[in-house]
Length: 166
Image (cartoon, rainbow, N blue to C red):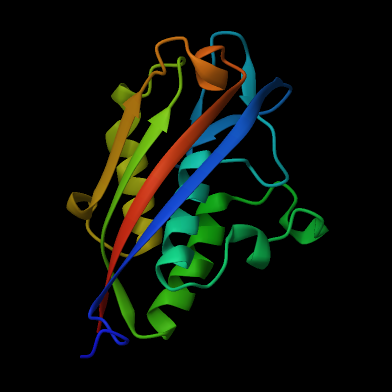
């Protein structure tokens, strides 16, 4: 394959959502109880982990971003399960002849503690991505009380995906 037709593509994704009262806190398809009763604000379920991974897949193939396919002004996506949206994007990727090699992600949140739930999040993501759990990394860190995550104004996530041409 030439440089214009590579065997591999890498995608980067990022998302952040505000923490608010009256919303569920869902990360990687897992519902968390925030100590202050906070959840993530957004049109869908606002799962920043899934959104960042979705954008990394789309970015790897230069297909735009999550808002192009699931615009927040479209009522059909209100309250949508982000794992189902991810599955739709996985179909876009595989229909173009690519397979997901692995996904690496990091969620930045002061609270709640995510580490006890990492394997459940990885399992949910692996199912939606159609890959083994060993190919899905989810890490959790705090921002050491710095920035919007540190002040508990929001939760963010960075994700990187590697695709291989089938």
